Amino acid sequence: MEVTKNHPKYYLGNRDLLIIAVLSGIGGVMSTYVGYLGNLINQVFGVPFGAGQFASGLHVFWFILVAGLVKKPGAASAAGLLKGIIELLTGSTHGVAIVLVSLVQGLLIDLVLFLFRHPSMVSYMLAGGISAASNVFIFQLLYFSGAPITYIIFIGSLAFVSGILLAGSFGWSVLDVVLQARPYRISAREENSIIAPDKGVKTAPSTIKVVSTFLLILLLAGGAVYYFALVFEPPWIAPLIQVEGAVEKTISLPLEHFTSHETTIRAELQGQVKYVPPQEYTGIPVYAILQESVPSSEATKLKVMASDGYMVEFDLIKVLNDNQMLLIREGDSLRLIAGNYEGGRWVRMVNKFIIE
Image 1 (cartoon, one colour):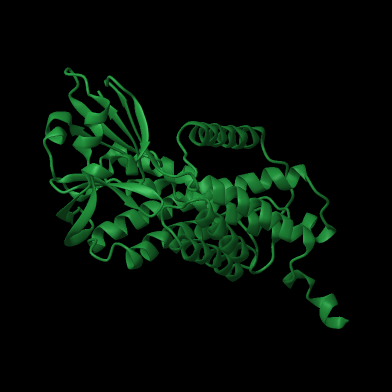
Image 2 (cartoon, rainbow, N blue to C red):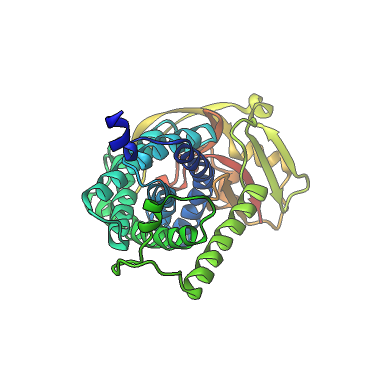
């Protein structure tokens, strides 16, 4: 009886489990949208990956909320494991590795917050920064072993800053607003833990903080609605390739429709941060797919779109005469093999060709 009485803070109650489940579920689904935002940032800076790490704090934001609402060791870790599983099941492009990445992020938040005696904005910002940056180094070990260490440190720094701002600082502000609003019953001990940063007294959040917090939430929610309504393709739907734009016939067909054109090439991926030795790829020449739609004689460009928002552009005339450019089936998605181009143009999760 004494053990149960003295150590309730180490056990997750029903309310704690509900908070973890709800926030992990939302975070797992929203992370696919965050990946889309990251690809948009990459396109702005003209790099295949890296710049998008400035949005990585949004992946960790949910763990900050869990840690701040539950206030028990292991809560963020549990949320990390659950969120990673949900991301995997909803079609994460990283595969099963995302479970490991998410779990480590949750563990790091638990560890950093455990080292601080009292919660503060500084402790939450540090936890968010370290947690967000960890994904860069895990993916470096798993996928990008050939990347220059200076580049890894650079994008790791971007992720760290993102974690400070979008996970730690923003998460602290949201917690302040949520805890003051008291959407659920809290105990006297928890009520006394609602303190203003660095002051040690309870205060109501300022109007500016409330308004800015809700505006940012509405902005992210609006973008997510757009993404899931118009861009996202569920992983359980068989991949189709669409061709549209300046064509006589818009098509949306499975790759199997072009089986008679199937061919095998040998290609080498030479990217800025990744290298794959020459190997054989079997698929459908892109020119054969485009000819099915009959491009306009005035068209000059081909845009290759991915379901996560990534996009590259090619000269249409060159593509129509390129026998080293294939579309292949890779798991449950389609991938562009561009043998005559650098690695950043080998697009994964292809879902659309747009001719202009």
